[in-house]
Image 1 (tube, helix red, strand yellow):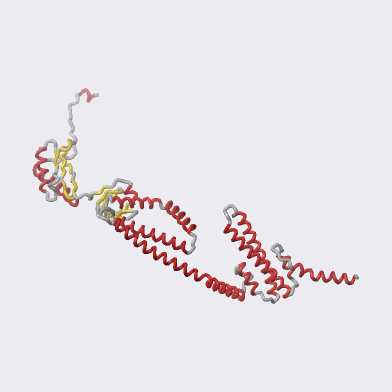
Image 2 (cartoon, rainbow, N blue to C red; image 1 turned 120 degrees about the horizontal axis):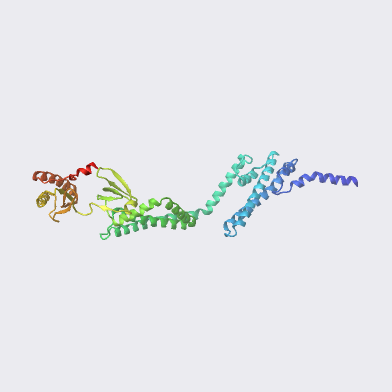
Length: 420
């Protein structure tokens, strides 16, 4: 009796490690699992490895389900779904680390672990512990097979979607050109006073907007979710608009300048504190060439927000001159001389008639106003020629052109005041 009981106890002690090694759980400590695996032969380790493999595969399924639940969860259920996904992911990580320990033990015992390492590569990625040439080759072969199956299953649908995508883009490309042509004819009419630059801007804008709509339709046709794209465009537009508010202000001012056309290329203007000839215009700036041949780029925001003087907007211009004579000179004679000189100049227009009038009595001179008219392009020639001719003629006729002076009158001071 005692001998039989001892035999039963001995068998139980011999089988204890194998029975304890059968426990498959992520809660098993690494050290305890290592001790359980010691002393097992290759067949026993292969059996344990299959058990751990099944547990890992089930953990992968649980993690994928938790990920799908998180993706489909409503806003109020997302915290709980996020927590469940985190637990499933952590459980898979713990199981895979212990599974790797079993696989390494089986490999050391001479067992075939190729398929097991393929699973480890899929779950944990490539690391030193599971790096194996045969496993990598098996994994690559598996990926190739899966890729072929995916292509066979999805290729027809992909081809149809690709064709639909290209066709929609082609149709909207034609529509964009057609829309641009319509806009060009509308803004190019004789009744529409618009600069060439603004016409080009409107035409290009319409064409690009139509093509952008076509691109969105094409993406929608291939089942691309447009919500993130539109949201990103809105956020990007806000950021760009905030960062480039000065540039956008100049852009808006440029559109107003091109629409109302206070000046055009070739005009001489005084705008933004600069006087010069307009040599280039864009939607953000205007380039002026000053009389001394300097190129000045003025932002359109400064131009539209200030006073704009177009010197050459009209074909004729009045030359304003103020000529001073002495108080002792004959005013009528001086007026006759000035009128004669003005009418004698070949670039002074007969109509409107020049005006010669006494303008004011200054501190040192009697000021005569000389107002001849000429073509705008002849303004400076008339001004400079008449200034010189008036000086020479006044010298010949003895008419003075006084400079600023002050008369001092000395009076007798009583001697008693000097002594005081």
